[in-house]
Length: 151
Image 1: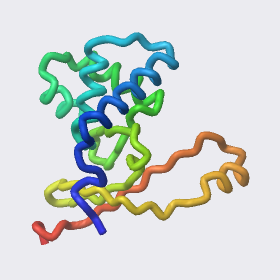
Image 2: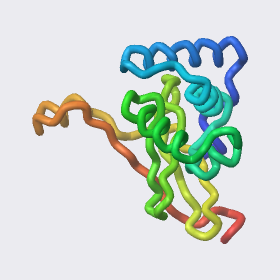
Image 3: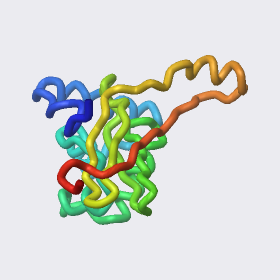
Image 4: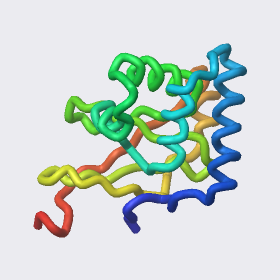
């Protein structure tokens, strides 16, 4: 069944653990630890997305758009964030740090409401890799329909 989001805001000690995990990923990838990157990582740990870059900037007014774009691209590159594309020309990002972060979305085609779906039926990634020779496979699956409020 669809829910508003698959995870509630994490407890403070869990947030700190995720933050340290993210900082270690940045360090391993050769990226410097900056106040701006720390602020963005804390934002994505505390807030459940997906968020557009405009939304991220609106909620982090001390960060300029160029810093946000560059940081989000780096975070996606090292799997801190995952990119979400609902086909509306707006790229969104959400955390990819928790084991429970993998989920899909259902989007209302009238009001753009987004709900997360915890259940994922896509299995056998290893088998697909073996059959095709592709490596590092990932998938994205989004559903579109009309929400109860718009019906």
